Length: 185
Image 1 (cartoon, rainbow, N blue to C red):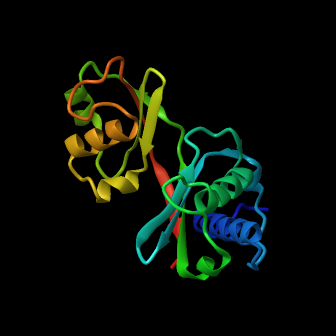
Image 2 (cartoon, rainbow, N blue to C red):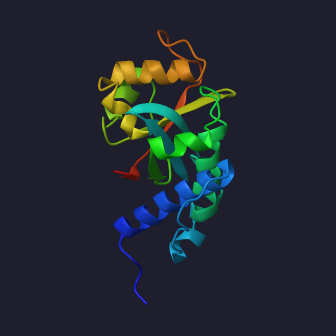
């Protein structure tokens, strides 16, 4: 049996995310379809928006569990555990749009200075993970929409990681990844 196309996988991931949130909040949602690709390891981010504004976003950078399990765990966490927002209520579920991003494996970037790193980034395409000591943070490629200039993108990500945005970070390492993303209408 041939595998369904990637767009159908996106619809399945979106339905699975909405169903998981609905279940967690004690409301009803259509049961998601199954797909053999859900058993493969995968890393996802689930983003929830209300009226076009961020309402929650949680995800995995590394594929640690099955794709099906990862999207469920991240959907519930985005709705109820994002520390920037109060937990969603069941009455909010019908007022939000869900986006699922499926991450490619991250690849380390070789660089000797932050200017060199910025020159290697592909705005709008690359997600970026920064590491410095115990600190790390990531921005999905979608963040380029708000921060299209590499210097501002990198400074904001350093700040998110708890690093000084305006000076070189000690022992800074970086990795990039791309995403396939699907949004509810």
